[in-house]
Image 1 (cartoon, protein in one colour):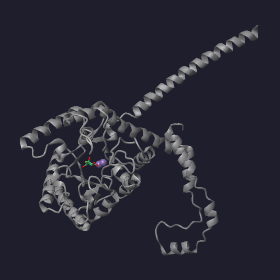
Image 2 (spheres, rainbow, N blue to C red):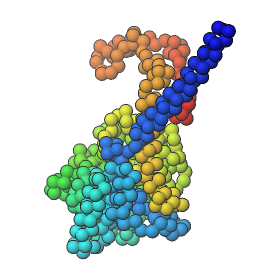
Image 3 (tube, helix red, strand yellow):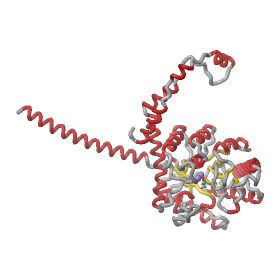
Image 4 (cartoon, helix red, strand yellow):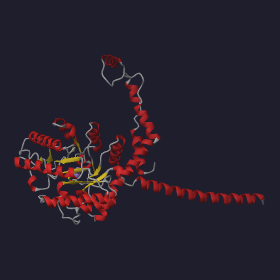
Length: 423
Ligand code: GLT
Ligand code: MN
Ligand code: MN
């Protein structure tokens, strides 16, 4: 009898405990969800920005017309405010139509500034369209026609005036038309010289006007030209030290552009960062071997996006995280908002994953093992005659070196498990 009641008591206890455990579990899951929701919520300190041309993209492609109606700039700012972005960037003509009379220009700028204030949006970067108007059919700064080259400078100076008025401190130059279909048209080194002359001129204007801009040069291998001269970020990193004011000029690497060239985007970004030249970044996605897709960040190459976010966060990059992408052509403007939210959310999810990766004991144990060096190894950091003599004397045990593990398969699988959410 006594045993029976003990048994019953134990049963009730167990049930209650299970109930409590379930409740506790549910509460914990809720806390987790809330914490994560907060973790993935864009905030101003994340510096997420979008180009006016990205959210206002109307879905036109070379084979089909627009699918979305015009989204006026003030409406685009509203959309970005609602989506939780921090900044908006623009080309001169994204905001002010070409050849607008001054009074009209000023009215447009005022209305835009008011919209930015109302929706808590800043303008970190400005740029210039030197590709849309047919006059740039043979390029802008590198065009053969000296009048086109002069016009390109004038247009850029006016775009700098506009950017400065809006508070931008970064000025992007994307030479989309600076290229060829046939190399018969000019010597390629002549194009490099013309480009240098133009950037030098604009740096001098920047100093003259005390705008304090930092120029960020954006590379692309092709599209809309058959070949664009400055094909990769690496090309620009080689070009910048040849300028009159190299300290004023850096790069704006774009995920899609380097991927179109078949390159590892993060490697280019890392080199720019290491050289102190990562002034801006264009985040999006792209399948290699395709046309210029400008897909939502993280939507096509999850692992590449992860390594990139991990790199930026580990390095302490504190510039804008600019999304230069656009929504699928199948979307309406609600879908464009989903697209914008998705870019930022994916970045923040990957940022949280990078923190997990850095805190993961198994991953860190492998990294520690990889970094270990035998104590007898002569130092090779800086050259000295005695150091070099010690290195020349040293006997390397290649068999022992070969026996050291390089467990990259496991490291990569741990990364995969972590990204897949099972770790
Ligand atoms: C254009 C291009 C982008 C550039 C923009 C800046 S315009 O949309 O595809 O990569 O960053 O000029
Ligand atoms: Mn871009
Ligand atoms: Mn692009």
